[in-house]
Amino acid sequence: MTKRPDGALEHDIMTVLWAADAPLLPGEIKDRLSIALAYTSVATVLGRLQTKGLVERSEAGRAFAYRAAIDESQLAVRRIGEVLSSASDKGQVLAGFIGSLSKKDMNALRSMLGESDS
Image (cartoon, rainbow, N blue to C red):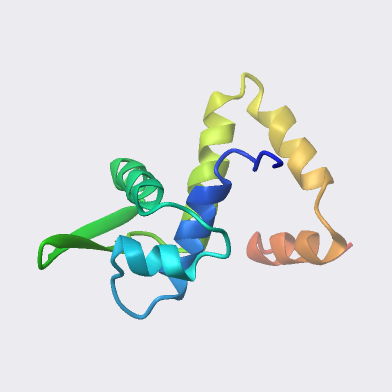
């Protein structure tokens, strides 16, 4: 069995919640995942996601139902901010990130900044 990257299960669960039209019970989330997991594993990860502020829970009978508290783009922004805040040279990190962008992404960034293509 190969080890999954850190955060992969959290991301898989968030993907299920982003696609849902309504809050889901842990068992419903478990059933929608592409990997076989124990109910308790899903419940444990949901608890961690709630602690991080990524999901919200509400009572649903004797259980809790969960929904995403932020959307995928908000999560990406949060993660980028965490990486930048942990860097000693933010300028170097930003320069490296910008240098890794595709031409299409670079044009989108220029457009957001009000610059023309050059």
